[in-house]
Image (cartoon, rainbow, N blue to C red; front, side, top):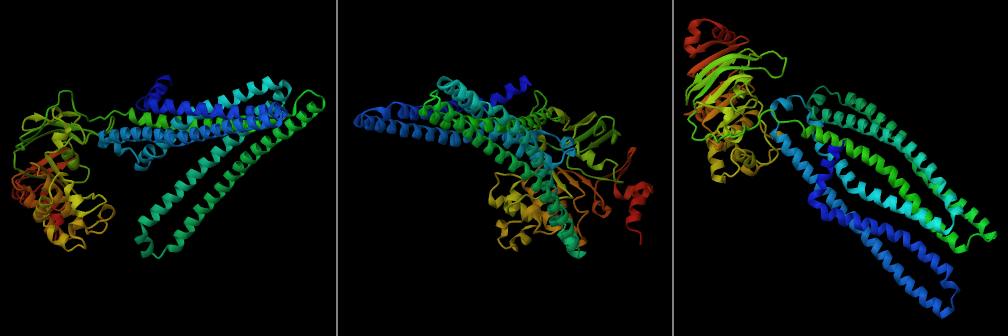
Length: 578
């Protein structure tokens, strides 16, 4: 706990002058609030008993002083609200940059076990709660303590009995506020769960709207939504019961303090024990010490939310990337493209089944290597080891004789181009998506890459050509068009090593032909690995590897493997039977 709190406090360090200024103005503002009722007491006690001219002069001076204090208090509150929030936002910015940068370092194995929504919440709502705590927490605490203690000491010096009467209600307010605050928090938590369920339902409906309409099931969806919406309404109603109890109860208690102080004070005045000026002062101070009670209660909730968010943040930051540059890792340069698998074994997690077992493979630079086999045989896994998306659990993968664990990840991955079956296109234009292959490429280079990928023609037919917005994940494009953009991206990157992971298996015959032609052009003079589902696409491969659960069962050219009449021949005849 102590170590975590020290780490949390360290986020103030770059903004220490701003934090100290924020705290100074918070204390000054609280001090001004305490001073003004004393000036009122002075006027009602002393000034109004003076001779008219002197009284008027003093009132004028004190009015100017009070206006000055109001201006100071206004500036203090403005500074706290503006610059205090800016400080909180800057800390939130730093923490968001830190966790987002950390996400970029984590490997595929981490993301395999995570939900994107949960990772998003850690970078949005959790960080907002933390920044609110770091901004409001210290100032609310300081202001509340100064106002409550200051009011108590000042009032105690004026009249002990009346002070004890006024402050007797403070513990009652604390208990009452805590009770309702706890229940309100639970109710609002239920609200968040219910709204998350509704959001999930809406996302599910909108994502599958084509299925909904094809089955004419709009009414079914409306019924499902109605059920969720009713649940949310019921949860909201419940939360408002506690919210109403909290605010009305505290308001009533504040008014009750005023009434009791007024009644007791009036009784003491009739007995000559208290002056009218002192009673007025007490009445002016009531709001000064009751308002901070609410702030203290809010602080406890704020601390719980913020610290819970911070613990989740630290939990994520504590996850060390399992794939990172070794100390002394060097740049991978002048790559020819010789790749060797030296007794490679691999399994995804501890105590899970081995996917690859003692694989030995030599691939010469410029070779066109195809991988076939049943689903789960390890074809994609084998290729994922080359760019170190996963690290081998035994043996070594080498490029040009160099263990890939001894080179930097950035330089390794910059030498490898990957075209996958499931193309991911980012929100933006065609130009943005192709340029992702080399962000500093010129427009002319992007167009040249698109031409090489047989994409230029269809791009020019789009409404704004290369500046056409392609929508979320390229929803406005066909499968073949998306695939050609991903190939253009790799053409622009121009790497010496290529991996085609079932790049044409989801396409129709016509699109497959165009994309296959682009892939063949891209593969020329590069070391290429092709994971193939359709065996027709790999007839020209120099070597075909047949993978099974036991490892590499067969290898050879298309012709050689057919002559062997083994696993490959069976797979081929199954695909082309009849």
